[in-house]
Length: 337
Image (cartoon, rainbow, N blue to C red):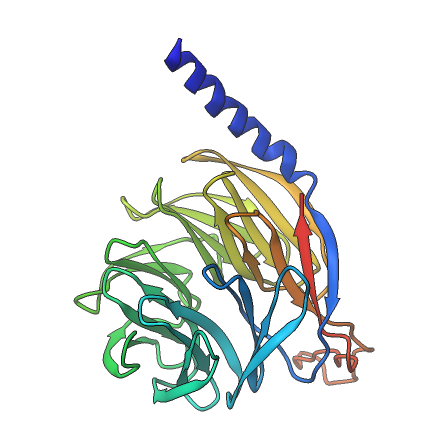
Protein backbone atom coordinates (compact mmCIF):
# COMPACT_ATOMS: atom_id res chain seq x y z
CA UNK A 1 0.00 0.00 0.00
CA UNK A 2 2.85 2.40 0.86
CA UNK A 3 4.47 1.90 -2.55
CA UNK A 4 1.12 2.38 -4.28
CA UNK A 5 0.56 5.69 -2.46
CA UNK A 6 4.04 6.91 -3.39
CA UNK A 7 3.44 6.01 -7.01
CA UNK A 8 0.10 7.81 -6.99
CA UNK A 9 1.69 10.91 -5.44
CA UNK A 10 4.42 10.96 -8.07
CA UNK A 11 1.86 10.57 -10.87
CA UNK A 12 -0.30 13.36 -9.45
CA UNK A 13 2.70 15.70 -9.21
CA UNK A 14 3.71 14.87 -12.78
CA UNK A 15 0.23 15.56 -14.13
CA UNK A 16 -0.18 18.74 -12.08
CA UNK A 17 2.99 20.26 -13.55
CA UNK A 18 1.68 20.63 -17.13
CA UNK A 19 -1.82 21.58 -15.98
CA UNK A 20 -0.63 24.40 -13.72
CA UNK A 21 1.84 25.59 -16.37
CA UNK A 22 -1.13 26.65 -18.49
CA UNK A 23 -1.98 29.21 -15.79
CA UNK A 24 1.34 31.14 -15.80
CA UNK A 25 0.67 34.81 -16.49
CA UNK A 26 2.01 38.25 -15.64
CA UNK A 27 0.51 39.04 -12.23
CA UNK A 28 2.47 42.18 -11.30
CA UNK A 29 4.35 44.86 -13.20
CA UNK A 30 6.70 47.11 -11.23
CA UNK A 31 8.01 50.19 -13.05
CA UNK A 32 11.65 50.71 -12.06
CA UNK A 33 12.61 53.37 -14.60
CA UNK A 34 16.17 54.57 -15.00
CA UNK A 35 18.41 54.78 -18.03
CA UNK A 36 20.41 52.10 -19.80
CA UNK A 37 19.96 48.66 -21.26
CA UNK A 38 19.69 45.46 -19.28
CA UNK A 39 20.87 41.88 -19.25
CA UNK A 40 20.71 38.97 -16.80
CA UNK A 41 18.67 38.68 -13.60
CA UNK A 42 19.91 36.76 -10.55
CA UNK A 43 17.88 35.85 -7.46
CA UNK A 44 19.63 36.01 -4.11
CA UNK A 45 17.77 33.11 -2.47
CA UNK A 46 19.33 33.79 0.94
CA UNK A 47 18.52 37.50 1.08
CA UNK A 48 15.36 37.34 -1.07
CA UNK A 49 16.57 40.06 -3.42
CA UNK A 50 16.62 40.29 -7.19
CA UNK A 51 19.77 41.61 -8.89
CA UNK A 52 19.29 43.15 -12.34
CA UNK A 53 22.22 44.13 -14.58
CA UNK A 54 21.63 47.67 -15.97
CA UNK A 55 24.40 48.92 -18.25
CA UNK A 56 26.54 50.90 -15.74
CA UNK A 57 25.22 49.37 -12.50
CA UNK A 58 23.33 46.51 -10.89
CA UNK A 59 19.89 47.29 -9.47
CA UNK A 60 18.87 45.39 -6.31
CA UNK A 61 15.11 44.97 -5.97
CA UNK A 62 12.70 43.43 -3.49
CA UNK A 63 10.83 40.95 -5.74
CA UNK A 64 7.81 40.96 -3.43
CA UNK A 65 7.16 44.69 -3.77
CA UNK A 66 9.25 45.92 -6.69
CA UNK A 67 10.99 48.38 -4.34
CA UNK A 68 14.53 49.43 -5.25
CA UNK A 69 16.77 48.47 -2.32
CA UNK A 70 20.07 49.74 -3.65
CA UNK A 71 22.51 49.77 -6.55
CA UNK A 72 26.04 48.56 -7.23
CA UNK A 73 27.75 51.27 -9.34
CA UNK A 74 30.79 51.52 -11.56
CA UNK A 75 30.14 48.89 -14.22
CA UNK A 76 30.52 49.28 -17.97
CA UNK A 77 28.04 47.12 -19.91
CA UNK A 78 26.90 45.02 -16.97
CA UNK A 79 25.94 41.44 -17.80
CA UNK A 80 25.61 38.86 -15.03
CA UNK A 81 25.66 38.39 -11.25
CA UNK A 82 26.66 35.39 -9.11
CA UNK A 83 26.81 34.77 -5.37
CA UNK A 84 29.44 33.14 -3.16
CA UNK A 85 27.29 32.83 -0.04
CA UNK A 86 29.95 31.23 2.16
CA UNK A 87 32.25 34.20 1.63
CA UNK A 88 29.43 36.75 1.79
CA UNK A 89 30.35 38.08 -1.64
CA UNK A 90 28.58 38.84 -4.88
CA UNK A 91 30.21 39.24 -8.30
CA UNK A 92 29.11 41.15 -11.39
CA UNK A 93 30.63 41.10 -14.88
CA UNK A 94 31.42 44.30 -16.77
CA UNK A 95 31.90 43.39 -20.42
CA UNK A 96 33.14 46.68 -21.89
CA UNK A 97 36.12 47.00 -19.55
CA UNK A 98 36.74 43.25 -18.98
CA UNK A 99 36.40 43.48 -15.21
CA UNK A 100 34.52 41.69 -12.43
CA UNK A 101 33.19 43.70 -9.49
CA UNK A 102 33.17 41.93 -6.11
CA UNK A 103 30.70 43.38 -3.59
CA UNK A 104 29.55 42.74 -0.03
CA UNK A 105 26.28 40.83 -0.03
CA UNK A 106 25.02 42.57 3.13
CA UNK A 107 25.94 46.19 2.45
CA UNK A 108 26.22 46.02 -1.38
CA UNK A 109 29.46 47.97 -1.02
CA UNK A 110 32.08 47.45 -3.74
CA UNK A 111 35.07 45.52 -2.39
CA UNK A 112 37.25 44.91 -5.41
CA UNK A 113 37.50 45.04 -9.17
CA UNK A 114 39.44 42.30 -10.93
CA UNK A 115 40.41 42.18 -14.59
CA UNK A 116 39.10 39.02 -16.24
CA UNK A 117 39.18 38.88 -20.07
CA UNK A 118 37.61 40.66 -22.99
CA UNK A 119 33.81 40.47 -23.25
CA UNK A 120 33.16 38.82 -19.87
CA UNK A 121 29.44 38.08 -19.94
CA UNK A 122 27.72 35.17 -18.16
CA UNK A 123 28.95 34.26 -14.68
CA UNK A 124 28.45 31.39 -12.23
CA UNK A 125 29.56 30.15 -8.81
CA UNK A 126 30.82 26.58 -8.49
CA UNK A 127 30.26 25.19 -4.96
CA UNK A 128 32.67 22.29 -5.43
CA UNK A 129 35.69 24.58 -5.87
CA UNK A 130 34.42 27.80 -4.30
CA UNK A 131 35.36 29.60 -7.50
CA UNK A 132 33.62 32.11 -9.72
CA UNK A 133 33.72 31.48 -13.48
CA UNK A 134 33.08 34.20 -16.05
CA UNK A 135 32.11 33.38 -19.65
CA UNK A 136 34.29 35.56 -21.90
CA UNK A 137 32.71 35.64 -25.36
CA UNK A 138 35.31 37.30 -27.57
CA UNK A 139 38.19 35.77 -25.58
CA UNK A 140 36.76 32.24 -26.03
CA UNK A 141 37.59 31.50 -22.42
CA UNK A 142 36.39 31.40 -18.83
CA UNK A 143 38.19 33.39 -16.14
CA UNK A 144 38.44 31.75 -12.70
CA UNK A 145 38.26 33.91 -9.57
CA UNK A 146 38.59 32.92 -5.94
CA UNK A 147 35.17 33.43 -4.31
CA UNK A 148 36.74 34.68 -1.07
CA UNK A 149 39.53 36.97 -2.25
CA UNK A 150 38.23 37.90 -5.68
CA UNK A 151 41.68 37.24 -7.15
CA UNK A 152 42.10 35.81 -10.64
CA UNK A 153 43.40 32.25 -10.15
CA UNK A 154 43.12 30.72 -13.60
CA UNK A 155 41.78 30.69 -17.14
CA UNK A 156 39.96 27.96 -19.04
CA UNK A 157 40.44 27.86 -22.82
CA UNK A 158 37.01 26.89 -24.13
CA UNK A 159 37.76 26.61 -27.84
CA UNK A 160 34.76 28.71 -28.83
CA UNK A 161 32.61 31.68 -27.87
CA UNK A 162 30.81 31.02 -24.56
CA UNK A 163 27.44 32.57 -23.81
CA UNK A 164 26.26 31.01 -20.56
CA UNK A 165 27.29 28.18 -18.23
CA UNK A 166 25.98 26.17 -15.28
CA UNK A 167 27.52 24.20 -12.44
CA UNK A 168 26.43 20.63 -11.78
CA UNK A 169 27.58 21.04 -8.17
CA UNK A 170 29.93 18.05 -8.38
CA UNK A 171 32.94 19.79 -9.89
CA UNK A 172 31.65 19.75 -13.46
CA UNK A 173 30.60 22.82 -15.41
CA UNK A 174 28.71 22.95 -18.69
CA UNK A 175 28.99 25.83 -21.14
CA UNK A 176 27.18 26.74 -24.37
CA UNK A 177 29.48 27.65 -27.27
CA UNK A 178 27.47 30.14 -29.30
CA UNK A 179 29.61 30.10 -32.44
CA UNK A 180 29.84 26.31 -32.65
CA UNK A 181 26.33 25.18 -31.63
CA UNK A 182 27.94 22.95 -29.04
CA UNK A 183 28.21 22.28 -25.31
CA UNK A 184 31.48 21.69 -23.47
CA UNK A 185 32.04 19.97 -20.13
CA UNK A 186 34.66 21.61 -17.90
CA UNK A 187 36.56 20.06 -15.02
CA UNK A 188 36.32 22.98 -12.59
CA UNK A 189 39.24 21.98 -10.39
CA UNK A 190 41.59 21.26 -13.31
CA UNK A 191 40.29 24.30 -15.22
CA UNK A 192 40.13 22.48 -18.53
CA UNK A 193 37.61 21.23 -21.08
CA UNK A 194 37.19 17.45 -20.97
CA UNK A 195 34.34 16.90 -23.47
CA UNK A 196 32.45 18.62 -26.26
CA UNK A 197 29.35 17.67 -28.23
CA UNK A 198 27.22 19.20 -30.95
CA UNK A 199 23.64 20.26 -30.26
CA UNK A 200 22.72 20.91 -33.91
CA UNK A 201 20.09 21.70 -35.19
CA UNK A 202 20.03 23.94 -32.08
CA UNK A 203 22.04 26.87 -33.50
CA UNK A 204 23.61 29.80 -31.65
CA UNK A 205 22.87 28.66 -28.06
CA UNK A 206 22.44 31.38 -25.46
CA UNK A 207 20.63 30.54 -22.19
CA UNK A 208 21.43 27.32 -20.34
CA UNK A 209 19.74 25.48 -17.46
CA UNK A 210 20.31 22.14 -15.74
CA UNK A 211 18.29 19.33 -14.19
CA UNK A 212 20.86 18.09 -11.67
CA UNK A 213 18.82 15.03 -10.68
CA UNK A 214 18.51 13.58 -14.18
CA UNK A 215 21.69 15.19 -15.60
CA UNK A 216 19.88 17.05 -18.36
CA UNK A 217 20.94 20.34 -19.95
CA UNK A 218 18.55 22.83 -21.57
CA UNK A 219 20.16 25.07 -24.20
CA UNK A 220 18.01 27.89 -25.57
CA UNK A 221 19.00 28.60 -29.17
CA UNK A 222 18.45 31.61 -31.40
CA UNK A 223 17.31 29.23 -34.16
CA UNK A 224 13.99 28.91 -32.31
CA UNK A 225 14.48 25.62 -30.48
CA UNK A 226 15.67 24.34 -27.12
CA UNK A 227 18.30 21.61 -27.34
CA UNK A 228 18.09 19.09 -24.49
CA UNK A 229 21.26 17.11 -23.78
CA UNK A 230 22.25 14.12 -21.65
CA UNK A 231 25.23 15.42 -19.65
CA UNK A 232 26.32 11.87 -18.73
CA UNK A 233 26.61 10.50 -22.26
CA UNK A 234 27.39 13.85 -23.86
CA UNK A 235 24.71 13.75 -26.55
CA UNK A 236 21.72 15.70 -27.76
CA UNK A 237 18.45 13.95 -26.83
CA UNK A 238 15.92 16.13 -28.61
CA UNK A 239 14.90 19.63 -29.56
CA UNK A 240 11.59 21.39 -28.88
CA UNK A 241 10.29 24.65 -30.40
CA UNK A 242 10.55 27.90 -28.43
CA UNK A 243 10.05 31.60 -29.21
CA UNK A 244 12.49 33.88 -31.02
CA UNK A 245 15.28 35.86 -29.40
CA UNK A 246 15.88 33.59 -26.39
CA UNK A 247 18.49 34.73 -23.88
CA UNK A 248 17.77 32.78 -20.67
CA UNK A 249 16.63 29.31 -19.61
CA UNK A 250 15.61 27.94 -16.22
CA UNK A 251 14.55 24.55 -14.83
CA UNK A 252 12.27 23.96 -11.84
CA UNK A 253 13.23 20.65 -10.25
CA UNK A 254 10.05 20.42 -8.19
CA UNK A 255 7.59 20.87 -11.05
CA UNK A 256 9.70 19.39 -13.85
CA UNK A 257 9.19 22.51 -15.95
CA UNK A 258 11.83 24.12 -18.15
CA UNK A 259 11.48 27.74 -19.30
CA UNK A 260 12.88 29.79 -22.16
CA UNK A 261 12.43 33.59 -22.09
CA UNK A 262 12.24 35.06 -25.57
CA UNK A 263 12.72 38.58 -26.86
CA UNK A 264 9.60 38.21 -29.00
CA UNK A 265 7.55 38.70 -25.83
CA UNK A 266 6.93 35.10 -24.78
CA UNK A 267 8.11 32.51 -22.29
CA UNK A 268 8.02 28.93 -23.57
CA UNK A 269 7.14 26.37 -20.87
CA UNK A 270 8.29 22.77 -21.40
CA UNK A 271 7.41 19.77 -19.23
CA UNK A 272 9.88 16.97 -18.55
CA UNK A 273 7.56 14.00 -19.07
CA UNK A 274 10.55 11.73 -18.51
CA UNK A 275 14.30 12.35 -18.78
CA UNK A 276 14.09 11.56 -22.50
CA UNK A 277 10.68 13.01 -23.40
CA UNK A 278 9.57 16.66 -23.32
CA UNK A 279 6.39 18.51 -24.21
CA UNK A 280 5.73 22.21 -24.80
CA UNK A 281 2.79 22.87 -22.48
CA UNK A 282 2.39 26.66 -22.66
CA UNK A 283 3.49 29.81 -24.44
CA UNK A 284 3.07 32.67 -21.99
CA UNK A 285 2.76 36.25 -23.21
CA UNK A 286 5.11 38.78 -21.57
CA UNK A 287 6.27 41.88 -23.49
CA UNK A 288 8.68 42.40 -26.40
CA UNK A 289 12.26 42.68 -25.19
CA UNK A 290 11.72 40.45 -22.14
CA UNK A 291 14.52 38.09 -23.15
CA UNK A 292 16.14 37.39 -19.77
CA UNK A 293 14.54 35.71 -16.78
CA UNK A 294 14.92 34.33 -13.27
CA UNK A 295 13.07 31.61 -11.34
CA UNK A 296 12.29 31.47 -7.63
CA UNK A 297 12.58 27.74 -6.85
CA UNK A 298 10.52 28.07 -3.66
CA UNK A 299 7.51 30.06 -4.90
CA UNK A 300 7.92 28.94 -8.56
CA UNK A 301 7.46 32.54 -9.66
CA UNK A 302 9.22 33.82 -12.76
CA UNK A 303 10.71 37.29 -13.20
CA UNK A 304 11.63 39.11 -16.39
CA UNK A 305 12.36 42.72 -17.36
CA UNK A 306 11.76 44.94 -20.37
CA UNK A 307 10.64 48.42 -21.37
CA UNK A 308 8.45 50.19 -23.90
CA UNK A 309 9.99 51.01 -27.27
CA UNK A 310 9.64 53.77 -29.84
CA UNK A 311 9.59 53.39 -33.64
CA UNK A 312 12.46 51.58 -35.33
CA UNK A 313 14.97 54.14 -36.67
CA UNK A 314 15.80 54.16 -40.39
CA UNK A 315 18.86 52.32 -41.57
CA UNK A 316 20.57 50.54 -44.43
CA UNK A 317 19.45 47.06 -45.59
CA UNK A 318 21.05 44.38 -43.44
CA UNK A 319 22.11 46.88 -40.79
CA UNK A 320 21.40 45.76 -37.22
CA UNK A 321 19.00 48.20 -35.60
CA UNK A 322 17.18 48.42 -32.30
CA UNK A 323 14.17 50.56 -31.46
CA UNK A 324 14.80 53.25 -28.82
CA UNK A 325 13.75 52.61 -25.23
CA UNK A 326 11.15 55.09 -24.06
CA UNK A 327 12.44 56.95 -20.96
CA UNK A 328 11.14 55.82 -17.58
CA UNK A 329 9.42 52.67 -18.86
CA UNK A 330 11.86 49.97 -17.69
CA UNK A 331 9.86 47.49 -15.60
CA UNK A 332 10.02 44.21 -13.70
CA UNK A 333 7.37 41.64 -14.63
CA UNK A 334 6.35 38.92 -12.15
CA UNK A 335 4.68 35.76 -13.44
CA UNK A 336 2.79 33.36 -11.22
CA UNK A 337 0.41 30.43 -11.50
